[in-house]
Length: 273
Picture 1 (cartoon, rainbow, N blue to C red):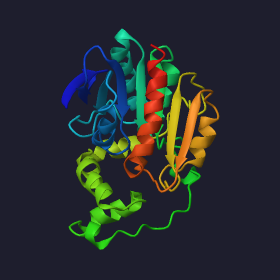
Picture 2: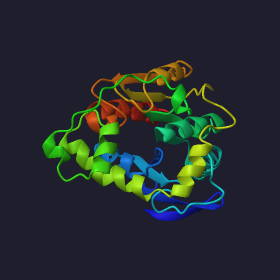
Picture 3: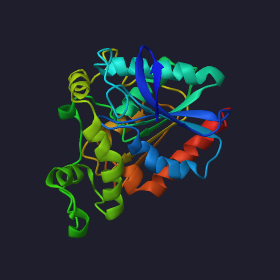
């Protein structure tokens, strides 16, 4: 991960793969960083050569310093659009977004239709107002004692809030790839963006004609799946999946199924070359 200047701010970038490979830009959730996507998705890409994976940390997350120029989702989108423009020099870019990153990815695709080849949305946030979301009623997860051992109370509470499959594998992912992002996010950046979370030029139901896959968790109590289904109906070439026994970390809890769906999407995007 290194700092990269774009649109007048600094972002964190990690690029994996060969220079001539098709670019895939990955956008993280809020308020975490790139590791929550990179760690499980790189296992998928290991068997799928030909893709240049670009993971970004937006200003205020991980190594990317906060900036007064990024204090809203509108500002974050401006940075994403500049990255898309850079990466699209040699052809259209595929976008992968998780949660808030999915919200930004779709908005970027609508605004840069010729530069975006396809969208993969993992547990996308489609309704910015949390109180307005159509969420499933999810009972609290029971964390086995051997998994909870060693977690402090605050970390365990946060794990319970997001976990559906509370096994040792998910707990290790949460500890190593999620908690550092949560703890490392700049509080001021989180407060500013959180207060202006909705895009002012609303594109929530604007169509995008490229290949789209939307993967949601049946027990996702953060962004849910029903709002995402309504969103999918606006996209003419969208594959939609709701996976049982999965929440907001379904790409870990149901990793094989998620990888299969994303792999099929990559094949569709690659066929457009």
